[in-house]
Length: 212
Image (spheres, one colour):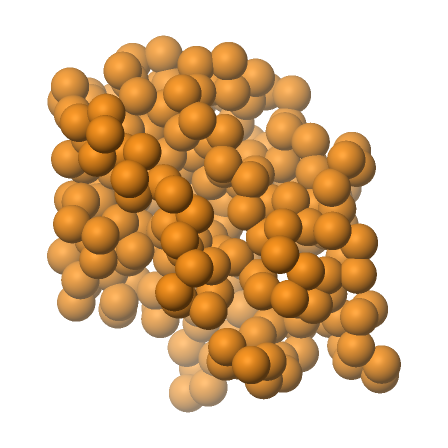
C-alpha cells in the first residue's frame, strides 16, 4: 500500500481503472492491473474519492476504425485539434468499459463516478474537461462544493488521462499530486527521442504538479 497520507481536504481521483486499459484489454497499458489493489487500499484512507470511467459510444470519433484507412495510434486533426486515433475501447456497456475487479473497494467509496468521452465527436482525456478544452465535466464544481483543495491522482494512463487531469486540476485552482507508483504509462514516442512521458513531466514541472 502507498505510504501517502492524505489531508482532510484531499480527494483521491482514480482515473479510468478499467478492463480495457489492463493486460488483455483493447488498449492495454503494461502492468495496468498491478496498481489496482494498492489504489483500492489507499482509497480507504481518503475522505473523498472520485473514480472516472471512459465511456465511449460505438463508432466514437477517436477510434481509428471510424476513419477509413486510418491506423491505430496515428493522429489526425479534428475540429478541436490534433487527436490520437485509438483502437476501439471502453465502449459503453462492454466488459472492457467495466471497472477492473480489484478496484471495487475504491468504486464503493466513490462520492462521484464520472463518465467521460461519451460525446461521439469529442474525446475526453481529462477528468475536468473534454478535449475541446472548453466543455466542462462538472468535476471542478463538485470538488469545490465538498471543500476539496488538493487532487491526488492515480490510475491510467500516466501520460494521457492522469497527466491531463492533473494539469487541469491546477488550472482549475486545485493543488495536484500524482502518485507515480500508482500509475502506468503508454509512453508513445515523440520526435527528438522524447516520449509522451517526457512531455507530460515537462508540463508538470511548469505547472507545479507534484510527484509523490
